[in-house]
Length: 206
Image (cartoon, rainbow, N blue to C red; front, side, top):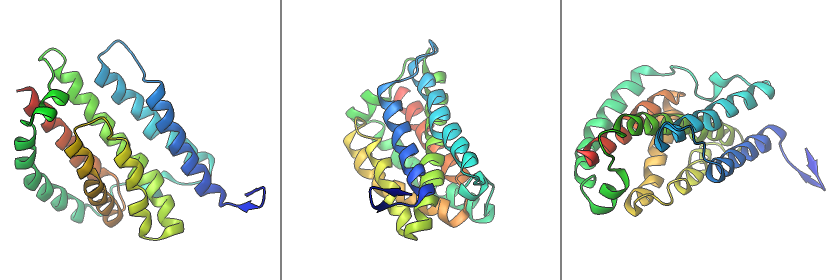
């Protein structure tokens, strides 16, 4: 694709553009379904972060399985995420009691199920957007550096959350990226991410 002399790879340019657009639209036009804000947000992000990228890949003639939508190397993925879950669980139990985490993640009992499900859907869909759709596209043109590059927009989506969490997402994002790269699947990162955010909401609301 030639834009006023700027020669751009078509597929990669479209993927970066779609990723940017869904993040902007998601930010400015939150979906309100009358079923609780977190559940509404989670369902909206399944649409924006999962369905739209899949449709984009299909229109480009690409197979979503090549972008992490498959089981992949489960013999690596399963023990890695179980080990990381055991390692990070005590950290979640501690930080969930910090004032800014407590304020952000606490929900009343009536809204708690929707909050847990909504947050789990949110992060699972985000794993495909960042560690599938975007990351594997960037790896194709930048090699392993694509894992790092895909982490930056992931970090920025955490602005507004507790500062410690936002600062930690660069390293957490690299970790999720490594899991997706090593297993060639977003499944394991999605499961781990959903477990961690669910635990945070449940403990903070206890």
